[in-house]
Amino acid sequence: MVEYAQEAVKKGSTAVGIRGKDIVVLGVEKKSVAKLQEERTVRKICTLDDHVCMAFAGLTADARIVINRARVECQSHRLTVEDPVTVEYITRHIATLKQRYTQSNGRRPFGISALIVGFDCDGTPRLYQTDPSGTYHAWKANAIGRSAKTVREFLEKNYTDEAIATDNESIKLAIKALLEVVQSGGKNIELAVIRRNQPLKLLESKELETLVTEIEKEDEAEKKKQKKST
Amino acid sequence: MALSSVLQSESADFSFNIDRSFSFGCGFGQTDLGFGAAPGDRLNFAIKASLGPDDKDGPERKIEFLHGTTTLAFKFQHGVIVAVDSRATAGAYIASQTVKKVIEINPYLLGTMAGGAADCSFWERLLARQCRVYELRNKERISVAAASKLLANMVYQYKGMGLSMGTMVCGWDKRGPGLYYVDSEGNRVCGDLFAVGSGSMYAYGVVDSGLRQDLSVEEACELGRRAIYQATYRDAYSGGQVNLYHVHSEGWTRVSQEDVLKLHHQYQEPKK
Image (cartoon, rainbow over all chains, first blue to last red; front, side, top):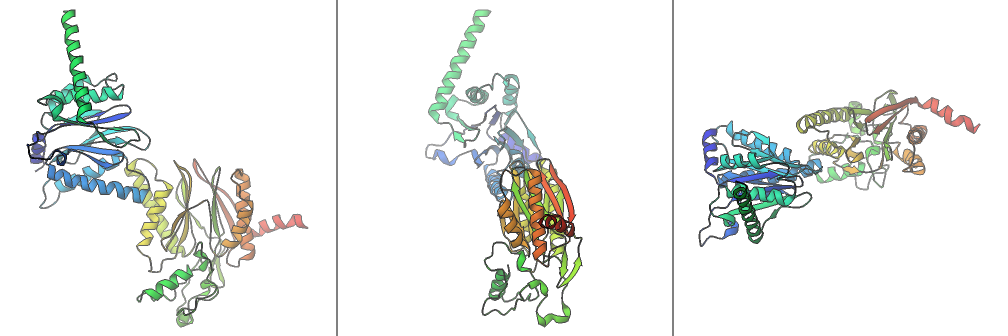
């Protein structure tokens, strides 16, 4: 049953997460919106609390449930422990929830993989990935969804300490990773960042466009250099 | 506390715990010490509730220890000082002079006992178990705030069912020294100074006059010791030994255990 759930995830639109030094970035492939559809109702990046947010790949309806439970748990934790959740705690909670559904009667597993990012109280940035079976791991950078493999390979090549040296560089890395698999550039990408002690911020399309053009210029410059050297 | 239990029984029909002998001293921050009963009470509280339940229940008198007691804890720059007496009474009978009223929840958390001994020790041991599980699951120590909240929530479920517990949860966590008062009524209060028990008023007098933030460890210990001693001097239901603990960043240390009689000679000698 878990395999079917994992298949559902593989058909979902791509999401990428990157852990920088002072910033964590989430990027998702935006599905093209029909003419009459309002754009805002299709949001794949959601806040769980002031300092934690997640993106998912897979069945949107399942994700809604998981997100809701996670949001409630974040507040319950604040109530009983008088401290905000750590990213690891809420990831563990989500993973335990998912695992329960793989082992109970008459229920099917959640068909989503989630990328959970945020900062802990002590300021450390974190990125975790969960999958339908209920396992979770910490990552420096990861991708889930349709073309996860391609993106992950790109990240493995390009995730270096230099690449994440500044906030801007980390954001560009996320965009570059998504551009590998997304069709037509900035219009189909949605990006969100959390900086330390600041709430989630969704990048506006203008900012995205500027960054995408920057990246394209850099790419061209690289190609010219390579041509010259050969 | 006597007042609140009166209010409860007036409003809730089913709580006929007439022999719920809370010591009034368990209450914190109440304006009347429970000496008098409010007019129109069904319940006749004796001047000290710990003298025993109502006449109705004469032969079935429950033996409840520790209603008379003095426990105190205060924060200062080097942590938290916890000082308690060690007398247990059942009515006018001194049941024991050597009771351990400080429960070591874990190497950096302490809980004090006032009220029913069974209630205090049971719930605090349960708290110790919860704290350990938290530590294992989250790979870090539980904070004093969270530990006291766990205890308060556990006990709140039994509110109105006759638990009698007035405890102080003391410890040191990443926020520094922590001190919370938790009782079976569901109160949970953070503070810098608490004294609980029938001798608490006497202890407050001593600590209030001597407490400064810049005390050294020895001065603070002496202040706690003196406060408990003075309480045992005046309160019939407190006595025995003074057990003193100091909670610092590395955990808690048992500072001393001194007999009240010895302290009496020590303090009274110079006056001659």
